[in-house]
Image (cartoon, rainbow, N blue to C red; front, side, top):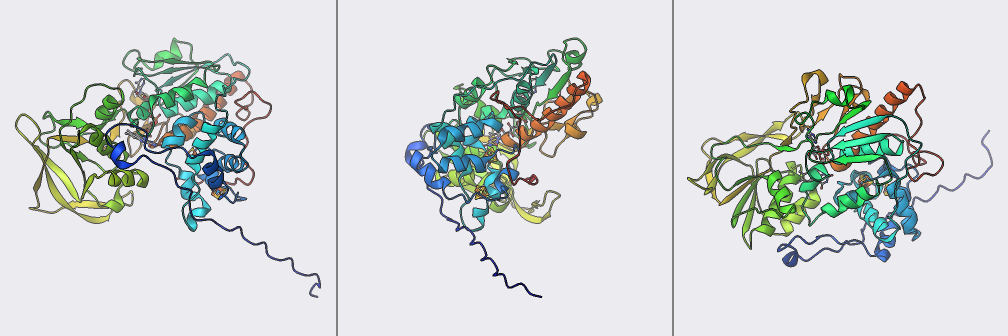
Length: 486
Ligand SMILES: Cc1cc2nc3c(=O)[nH]c(=O)nc-3n(C[C@H](O)[C@H](O)[C@H](O)COP(=O)(O)OP(=O)(O)OC[C@H]3O[C@@H](n4cnc5c(N)ncnc54)[C@H](O)[C@@H]3O)c2cc1C
Ligand code: SF4
Ligand code: SF4
């Protein structure tokens, strides 16, 4: 028999506001002559307005898409309530590189935000920045009860710093060996108009009470063998996070000519104020983020010159972040698609880049359409500088076959077993294709290192402790179900 009880009215779905509060940026004319920051932070009022667009989804899609499970839904809620101190604390609770990430994260969270279905997703990354700018971000991390075990981390990029933080807050004694003089890994090459060394230092300063020691200028595997760390130096576990610190070449004739610059060297030198000479007709080869940073940096160094980007596929296939492509277009970079370099012309200096036209064939293993050369289509683009931005690879000197490392398609080494353990017990290896992705892999490896060392002590493993020294541990936000892997 049908019930007489009235059916409750269907809840009205929350209204989505598709329009993002505009983020102010430096005018193009002014910004392309120096390295001033391009994007401004939201004002307090604008941040609150933008945060109010978030409908606080019961299932936090944004959090699930973040490789480090940053509870962005919660910091957005706090900003909407004008509680910037609370928002800063939530941000820093899961994210020890917040100052860097609020400027350069590829915001996978925003790709999964439900508002994107109707318009522009919530500006989750920019709101992270607002939390830190207007809330108290001078918080220092607190280690839990010291454990009498030491961990060596090789490489001070985002993965190495994240692992050091994860293990440091659990009370381990951590030493991070870095071959360069500065920390930050490839973040050291990100141009100052997006982020600076000072941002890395701001994040690092919050580590000061953890038992984490940074040892710069030491190349493990070259200065001493990796296995010395476990066998002689008193470390119980090792995390290899050496990333992809060397550049790939074009492998075409003429690449040794003066005027050809590998992008990583170029960007690093410019960032550190070292002398670097570019001409006034510059060609950058590549289609990724390093190429985007190279064209925009080259423009700023060219003294009113002209910069062309040459990419062997089409615009749709470009792997670079759309925000960066848009920035480069706005600044007047010329894009030349479906051309691949075959030779660099010149006698004692670069005079041109000889390119061949390409057609797009069927998709490759990665799903992108493969470029196919068109016979007899060679042409020369006159230029005096060629910047090569066609990818990076790991420098594996001293990391032997006994580790049985896997090299990913983009070149960084990983351990093949659960938690990124290598074939040598106690040695783990990870890293990744973006800052936050590398940090996510480091979290997984740190959990595995903690489990490995806890077992050695004969103790069970617990959750990550509160990094501010409070009671309770790390818990995923309410409604969280499963990570979205991007
Ligand atoms: C120009 C450029 C722009 C980028 N822009 C962005 C961006 O906007 N957003 C984003 O999310 N990602 C960006 N990335 C990618 C991001 O920087 C990397 O994905 C990330 O840094 C990888 O972190 P990682 O710790 O795995 O490795 P890395 O950053 O490569 O760090 C590895 C570290 O290990 C050190 N090392 C290597 N071998 C040894 C050894 N034998 N002994 C001691 N130390 C060693 C290296 O010097 C380096 O410091 C950019 C990369 C580049 C090159
Ligand atoms: S760290 Fe990056 S992916 Fe994660 S919430 Fe922040 S902006 Fe989004
Ligand atoms: S998915 Fe978007 S709307 Fe939903 S909680 Fe996250 S930021 Fe807010």
